[in-house]
Image (cartoon, rainbow, N blue to C red):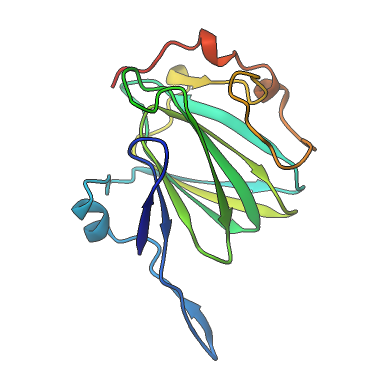
Length: 182
């Protein structure tokens, strides 16, 4: 597996070595030993799936506050997305920075997002399925979010937004979010 550091401190795009033959393809998309060697989380306590019908759908930017701040390992298992996350960690060198990563199910890539980051994505194809591994269980009372349209973030969504929940449209702006202390 190739671990590519991203502009958010502690974040990686992970690309497996895909091997193919007349039967199809094979790739190892997770290895606790390789993650551990890099000091990355290997304990995933919850896994979620998100299914999205139409391209242009946006979800996010969601996060959990301590003590349930979560590390995420995100993979697009069907279709293509622009995966986006924002560093909310107080004192981090990358605090306030946004990172965007293209995830394509054909390439089997994942993105490792450190605790203290808000996360979202936009579907670039119809019929997208996302798979998330979480280091902490979901606790609604610790949930937070940042508005995906905040001009201060200048997120360059590649498509016009075709679908977004009312809730996600009305999240607070970044400037009003208290930085996360881990």
